[in-house]
Image (spheres, rainbow, N blue to C red):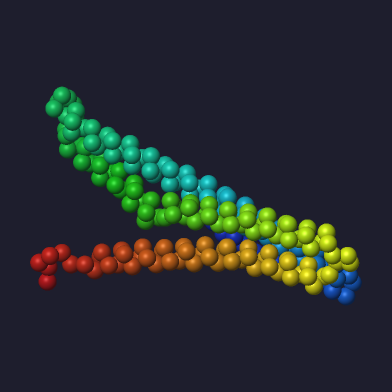
Length: 193
């Protein structure tokens, strides 16, 4: 699996095993496919989480600084009226609110949280998979290829469920924001015809 830019998660073609040769070797090929895919998906979430975290934290810090400055300027204004007009406090407060609105509109904070949750779920899936695989192969003599294949399939399916769940959460968030924006744009001010 490779990434194009920092936004796309591209799935490679899976290596197909030859079941006629050796079924355990075939399961091993599928296991490697599933593990490599998991690694790439997990790396993608960690990389994207970092980008979203930087934006989220930066916008939140900016909003706090602008909010504090906006609140202090009217207090200091009588003392330094010739240098600073109190109305600049309102401008800074509005800019701080704008930073929060920018974060909300582009979903940096919510994406950061979704990506953190997805990365944590992926780690839990990997850990559970590891012990299931070891338990299966430590006790089974000879190793049953069908049982091993079921473990690989479950691991791959659970990895896909994390991707699907996170994507559905993003779609719902995006749809809710669009609906809220559409609702606020279609609302007429009081007294408008």
